[in-house]
Amino acid sequence: MLEEVKVQTQEEKDTILIVDDMEINRAILCETFRAEHEIMEAENGRQALDIVLNPENSIAAVLLDIVMPVMDGFEFLRHFNDAGLGGRIPVFLITADGSDKSMRIGYDMGVMDIIEKPIVPYFVKRRVESVLELFRARKQLSNKVEVQHLQIREQEEEIFKLNYAIIETLSTAIEFRSGESGTHVKRISGLTRMLLEELRRMDPAEYAFSDDQIGQIATAAIMHDVGKIAISDVILNKPGKLTDDEYEIMKTHTVKGCEILELIPQYKENMLYRYAYDICRHHHERWDGRGYPDGLKGEEISVWAQVVSIADVFDALTNERVYKAAIPVEEAVTMIHEGKCGTFNPVLMEALNHILEAEAET
Image (cartoon, rainbow, N blue to C red; front, side, top):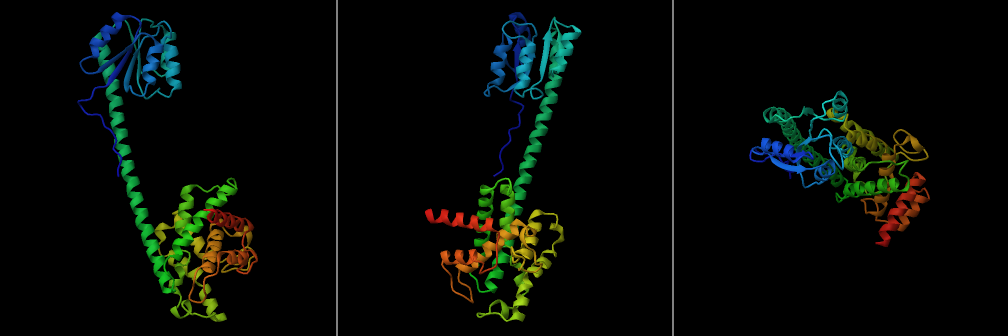
């Protein structure tokens, strides 16, 4: 749901803070602005600072004297700027000290205007109102930009959800072709996410994945076997062991997946596409270089392709397939560690152990 951004209405009045130790000066300024604005008063910089720092007070402008007891105008400005309010709330120096030095200090500290006493209400009002109108217009523009930004974010989220649904549907349909339940891709995505998060926990410097990156890689993992759509049902659903020739054909699903992704060139600059392409091609590469299709080894294989690789093998072992029964988790882990399913990065095997141990404890 789009968050509401408050835009000032014509009925709402800005609040002006008048800071002066002389009651008569405050009275003149109060009468000058009272008809169009709410007024707050302070006798010195300390009182004024308490008012502007109070989040319940929405101050639109400060009319500030320089020479005051307790805390003068310049000290107030230092604290005011340190609090990050400079530039957000316009400050006007209204002072009898019109020396070059005071004016230079005032402007250097970010005041919008310096108005010399004695106060001439008409001119003070015109000068202050012109600046307030500028700040009001800037705030309204900022609010509109924020609304548009929120709308764009909502649209992006809707597009992402739609794309995710399409990706998941396509990948699930391919799983159904190979006699799977359709939950394989979801399990791979979930285990990929857990492995990446565990790697980040184990070594945040080496595996400095952001939450967004982990989410994109987990989504890309869903498409790891998209190339199987180009493999014959006879080979895909064969209940027994594949012949050497059939195995060679099956291995082409890695390259076929990339060819399918290349049919959507408008997404090539998107990181999700890049992760998916790499995962499709390299999720059967192995740590010792005996995988396919490129014979990559060790760190030549991207971390995300390595993660999907071990997730895919673990899920294949522990779930029923057309050519095998499900294997108990403990036996599957032993097979992976003993290299019976190809070799894997030792760090990834350790991460998998941590995840399984944590699940066993819950």
